[in-house]
Amino acid sequence: MAGDKKKRGLLNGLTHYGDPGFAAYLRRSFARSMGYSEEMLNRPIVGITWTASGFNNCHRGVPQLVEAAKRGVLAAGALPLEFPVTSLGEVFLNPTSLLYRNLMAMDVEEMVRAQPMDSVLLVGGCDKTLPALVMGGISAGKPAVVLATGPMSTGRYHGERLGACTDCRRFWAQYRAGGLDDQQIGEIEGNLATTQGTCAVMGTASTMAILCEALGLMLPGGAAVPAVHADRLRQAEASGLRAAQLAMEGRGGDLAFDRIIDAKAAENALRVLLAISGSTNAVVHLAAIFGRLGLALDMDLLNRLSDETPVLVDLKPTGAHYMEDLHAAGGVPAVLRALRPQLHLDVMTVTGKTLGEVLDESDPWVDTAVVRTPDNPISPQGGLVALSGSLAPKGAILKRAAATPELFEREGRAVVFTSLEDLSARIDDPDLDVTADDFLVLQNAGPLASGMPEAGYLPIPAKLARAGVKDMVRISDARMSGTAFGTIVLHVSPEAALGSPLGLVRNGDRIRLSVKERRLDLLVDEAELAARRAAFAPPPGVGAERGWRRLWRDHVLQAEDGVDLDLLRGA
Ligand code: FES
Image (tube, rainbow, N blue to C red; front, side, top):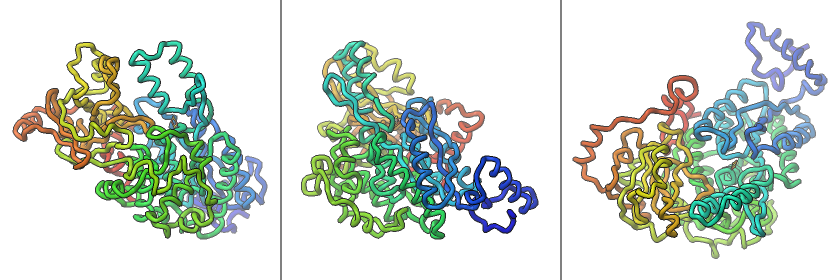
């Protein structure tokens, strides 16, 4: 009989028909129509997110991963049931994937909560996917384990090793500057992304996978195993098994994400982000993840940690290697061991062990060409710095590790583009009044105006690129791909569309950047700014009148709050 079973597994969270006995009977009857045995239906249930999609190349391996994860769940004595959630393929989404991260997080939260699963395996990888899965997982409050799809392997072009997507940008810059012809760029296009998996460098996907491992949300070693490696399937099997144990142990609630991520774990994540010279996007995603728990991402703390945390991982775009090399070099456990004296080791992980215990058990081997020792770092300081000042009252971010130090202490003339359309219409205009010493400023690419696309990597104007200019100071309220590089100030907050100082900048204004002082200032007097403010007219928002985009318009927060929706923050 259905009514006398313990309330776990299939009988969790019954559908409301006004008669729980009937609801249980009906659910079991319909579940049996799927061919499961009585013994299977009496097991605890592990939900597995299905994020495969014809619009997501990075998730091509998800079906195999789910199959392997199911083996692990079954071996542990639970029942695996996959369920679809939103899938975000970075380069297939218009206008930008960040606009849909919170939608995916809501989808995950609600489907994990609404369906009768005792724990969940969160499978994903492409840029916004892991943040969305973690955000949703936190808010759903059920025990969970993260499984990354893993990074792509590298390809070759004329003997040179290529990996998406730092090399995509390098070759495109050469093409723009006239150094490659159409046929060559076409051949390169065919060799940049040659396997399933996420971008092969320290982009956002790699960064977020590493941070999930550092936060203890993933099994040890799970971030860097290549997508096509047999170890990736073993990782999936082990992750399924662990998710099943959490469903069965009775202590799963102790190991739900909201219990694992505390202030100490959050500080560890920032520390690791700096040591790996990770993507600037991770600052936004971590702020959103922490915000789900009532924690703030403290920019002063980020700067303090940045000053005392060495960069240890030598990966592109700032270094020489690829994610597959990090795996071969010892993976994330090797990075965490190198950072050990600077980490909180008593934080909990989904393994049920503390971070310190996990590291004690890890293979001590490391290839120090890829994961440096603290006494021989790539840089004695972290890769990111937070800026503030009169142009960015609520902050901005610069990836100094990917920037040109000669441009760090500069005053320049603003060359302003008022929108993405304005940028693409004029950046290559031969008559554009611009020199290499100017600061390129892009407005209205922030969360509210444009969904905060990865447009902060403003191209060098064609006439300057052809003259050999490789980098300029570029400032915007946009984001930048973690695979990009340059002296690029991002996430300026508040965004221009709110009539902030960034929205008031005009061509010819003077701007001062000082990385040493962590300052970004607009050198325009207050009376002039007040006059511009009085005349300010906001641009039209994103879509806006209905559906998801209206919810976004009405509730989206700024970069310092992770661009989450205000109504999704908190526990
Ligand atoms: Fe999916 Fe880069 S496009 S991680």
